[in-house]
Image (cartoon, rainbow, N blue to C red):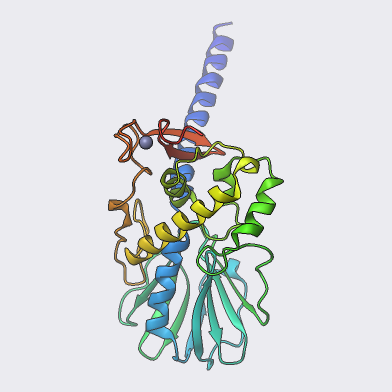
Length: 295
Ligand SMILES: [Zn+2]
């Protein structure tokens, strides 16, 4: 009898430990996914890459993580341009093909001299005569692919290149989701993640929970203006470092000092003095001012 009771207790204890561990894992995953690179961070990388590798010839490629698959035919190719589409870095090559790099959750690019040590979690290295480009990625979600067409774009509009707001409005009218989830849906608008979606909606005084179908064209024009302004300012600051974002040369961004709502829970709203709140929306920590973003 006593032995049975002991085993029942032991079972409960082990179950409790397991639950606690998985909760902690969920919290860590939440923090990581919260701060994945968004459009300004990827644009920062593109601008730095353009200055560093455009016109240069690839002399060596090392794939250190087999999960990336193989990318053949890069050695001897010259990078003619570096562009961006949404959150993807596009390196154009002199044989009309393109190297597409998507950093996903935790991917980082780092430029270094060949004499430096290769950091842990490096997944591939592209070498040039004047230095090498590393992709460091703890969670191994970043992808690398060669394509010979312009593809991968479908409808998604890049807010800095082709934000055709009338078309966005037409699609949004048919959707039932909250406006913030729509802004972050990469199928319709490319490059906006959690931080900038919070900032944009605060700027235009729209509640993140408002059904996107009810956002008028006039309001979409305001969202368009705020989006461009916020993203361009964030690019000028080389992105937002609230956890581990670093630019190509290992430096932190500066836009975290200019955030008006993200990360400011409990602090006064800079516009109306209301108190900023944080609530979950589709699993993401959503910061907003309940006073001036009432609708
Ligand atoms: Zn406010």
